[in-house]
Amino acid sequence: MTHRPSLLITNARLVNEGAITETDVFVSGGRIEAIAGDLASRSADTVIDARGMHLLPGLIDDQVHFREPGLTHKADLAHESRAAVAGGVTSFMDMPNVKPPTLTPEALEERCALARERSVANYAFYLGASNSNLDDIRRLPPGRACGVKVFMGSSTGNMLVDDREVLAGIFRDAPGLVAVHCEDDPMIRANEVSWQQKFGDEIPFSEHPKIRSAEACYASSSLAVDLAKQHGTRLHVLHLTTARELELFEPGPVAGKRITAEVCAHHLWFSEADYAGRGSLIKCNPAIKTAADREALWQALRDDRLDVIATDHAPHTMEEKLNSYLEAPSGLPLVQFLLPALHALHTRNVLSMEQLVQKACHNVALAFGISDRGFVREGYWADLVLFDPDRPQTIGRGQVLSKCGWSPFEGETMPGTVDTTIVSGRIAWRDGGIVESTRGERLEFRSN
Image 1 (tube, rainbow, N blue to C red):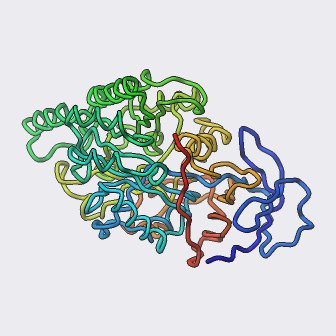
Image 2 (image 1 turned 60 degrees about the horizontal axis):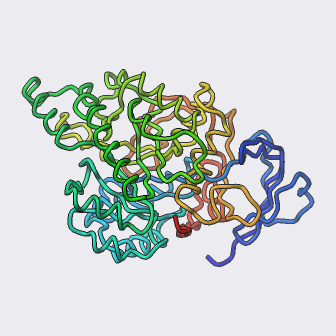
Image 3 (image 1 turned 45 degrees about the vertical axis):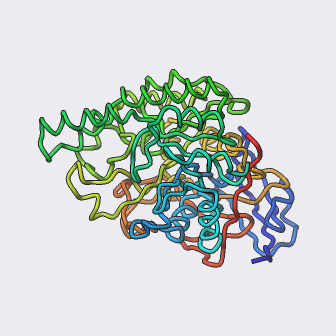
């Protein structure tokens, strides 16, 4: 794995740093050596004519649940990282609610060792927070984790942090970025009791956004923002879903922000009208909400109030998802179709290609302080995606690489297709297949 073949990409439409340009790119030793319009005469181990295709930086997904260790009947690093590169995602940041949960620096290093052996994509892991591991958070060496993940609302894995003194300690002492899942747990539990009294055990899935309500989201996200302002925390609020929450965040460039916000692909794509046809398959936390909320999220992307687009890729087996409302787990497998779905939103005028790259590539690298990735720049790691905007695909179950074997996008026609994905200078996905010899690198982080 020490040898990295040279690679020449010619005739590409490069989408990068707010512009679209015709150019060639030469890669050597895993890094981008040259970007220019006249490189076709260079000799390389592999030459790709990218005529008609977009060349993008590899997407960086800052929120995935690849389920390893302990939940590998749903997903694992091997399957999900392969799904990621098929979706144009070259780097991922994996969440700590596995079994056992990632609550110590030692457990985090063990997960990195697993990824080094099995992951086709570049990788990083969050250290999880609990009501009892503040000392472990304090001793986390800077730069070893992408951040500290705090569940301020309970979700899969029962890692709720609801001790206000512990929360204050985390926001005060965390050695780097704090990422938060924001939903007010007591409000949600009270709503569940009320809805169960009304419907019994057969609560319709259409009630999910009312149970995990906009009010519950705002109560928790406003608390997180208040704590961050009080303690000067570098805060990243995950998967925003409501129009009201957006008032908590400032518009403008991500550089220099101490508080940043993320939106996920499914909250940009679906609305409450989709529960009728998809039911448990789009049950997630926080819930997919109204069309008006979705339109507010679209506008907040354009206004730079929302900084990052991710997936919250969270697979469950179909058998698990087909349970009744109270028994069906929340979460969707999304990473394989992230770039095609975002490109489809581009064709609907939700965002420009330049904005897509800003939110899914550049801003993630800037917000998390990722070294030498997220941009197409000379000297940077060659994390690259060639995307064919004129090759439609209708998503079917047979295409799904995630271990769970299904996608909430089944039946949707995406207007474009990922042609080639390059991870740290090596081809990982090309012509509809994985290059099994490719392995990703551990992401490195600058101080935030």
